[in-house]
Image (cartoon, rainbow, N blue to C red):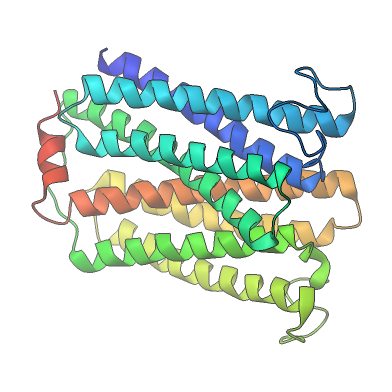
Length: 316
């Protein structure tokens, strides 16, 4: 397969992975997780479920997740056969396949054996890693296409900037987990009003109020970290337009993330609008995490001599 074919295959995989991640959030927000009862892979003993909203939502999510798994397998095979000199792309395809399988297994077990909010929050976190891996694959194959056209970066990034990127990405995942935990414990209404929580700068820290407030503080710190990262990416790397664009994208996404998070608070009493704002929040979050993951890889490749950079230079 040539680069163009691999690119479009990775695009298709990324799109279906996105739909699977979004579908899981729809299942959670509409409380349709048991729309098919405690059965898997059948839905109330049937391949085609009864025409109830909950069963259709749950079964559609299962179908899309299955498609995501099959496409991830196809992508994995294609990149391991036709890009043997690109270990980074092979790794992205492997991660996407592993985590889409893990999140599917966890989803199935959650249906058959109802589990805790801690575990269900991890389920979303794993699906996000699968989606982020597919984003990295798309960006990686696009980078290869640019290399073939003669656009190869010659500048390097500092190890300090690389480490900051890694820290920001890891911390983003922690904030993701906290947000998923807020959702799975029904703590979104723990803090009314924004930016204050129940009219207080520091409210009580018990129950849903404490969970929601902890997530808000973590999200505010994330805004500061990503803003610093974006500033350094843009102003300290004039010879690396890719790094500048990724840093700018991360900064814009985290700002939008803050406002979508605030909109959730103001729409809690309007279910249909709340469903839209909460899904928008998740979409922006998924994009932010994907961009940061890829930025982490690129800073690693551009921070000095390593095997990944050597592999990228060998791309045909």
